[in-house]
Length: 197
Image 1: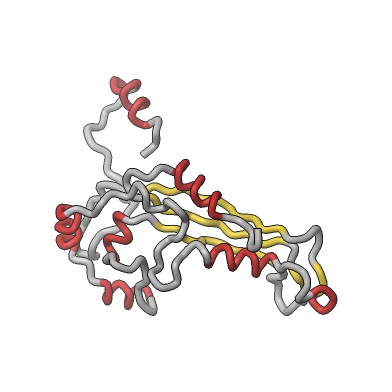
Image 2: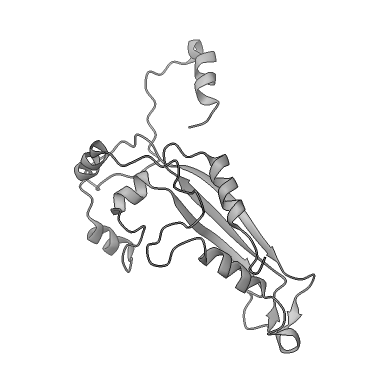
């Protein structure tokens, strides 16, 4: 929720005429069953830029002896997630995450989620996620770190054999209750370091 919304509503209460606000921006469990979202996870996003040289270089002349920004970026991003458990490896990432309660689990049971049906509707090869947590636990109550965009090197039609000087990734972290954007941003930024540093 906006940190300014409560104060704004209190300050302008006399000018407001609604007793209820309903947003249709959200999902529903099924086409024939409505749902009301009581909250969504927070978010913090950042862009990670890797620069390894002042200019792109010819791979035939400099390849093998010059750092490739795409390789460096890929290694940094891969290191932020455990390949076996899919847990985020950023130090302290889960420190403030609340324990999942029995009430939370009852709410998820009542949602009547069908993962196979969803996978078929979306054309998913299968669901993935943090080991030890159900799909709804992951979506509703666990934080995430997602790479939502990447660019680097030559991306036009055909091939251009360059070692790119720079590469970029956009990262989005969904936050669980009790996590703050400032804390998670700081932790992610402290994780990013170049190999052999």
